Length: 251
Image 1 (cartoon, helix red, strand yellow):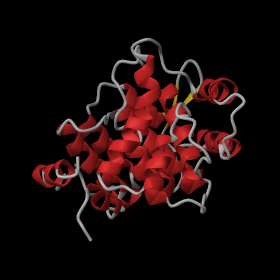
Image 2 (cartoon, one colour; image 1 turned 90 degrees about the horizontal axis):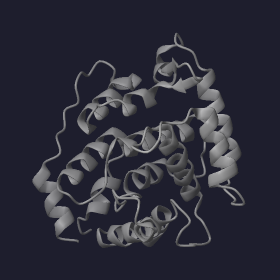
Image 3 (cartoon, one colour; image 1 turned 135 degrees about the vertical axis):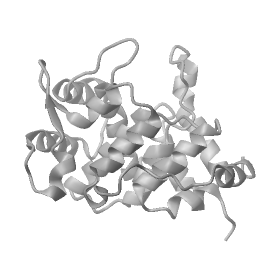
Image 4 (tube, one colour; image 1 turned 180 degrees about the vertical axis):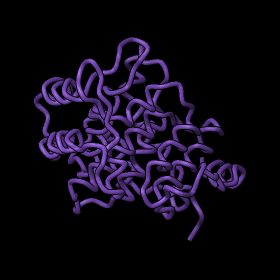
């Protein structure tokens, strides 16, 4: 089988290692990758695991979550680019060796292109993309709290749109906000909640709203994982030139 970037990242099933690959890819200037992508991917994994969603391939969903915004523009004043970036990203991913269905999943992170029939995985991407984005501070607004974000998600962003996981996502957010510090070790990373003057907020958001850079955000995420809690600081072993060779020969 020809070595492509698609094969390279898909065969890596450790989701933290996938983010390390994205860290280096972003350094090469190929894709959009920031702390918001890390948060949304973390939300997607928690959603699939806690709600026991068995009908999707978690590896595909998390990889798509990392890549679906790969051509996201930094300037959101150009509406034409905002409406086009998911399609541009899907085309770019196809050049990197991803199958058409994977590219379609990524394209359907938003609904601007009118792609149908929507993939199940795309509905998960859509939820975490909207909800995760609203939890984070932006230059033009403060972050919403989870309750506000859920209301906006259902009654504004997805108004008159069908998302097969919306009800389950609402229950998921309610569930993780009920978890309290002090649960057994396997639940520690779910219990990171903080209290603000406005409402209870998911604590992982606090880290991403701070001034942490991407490398630090990855360290924070890795340190939260129960099965890696004693490993210490992140140790990125991916060779930059290896990624550059695989990506540039395709694009």
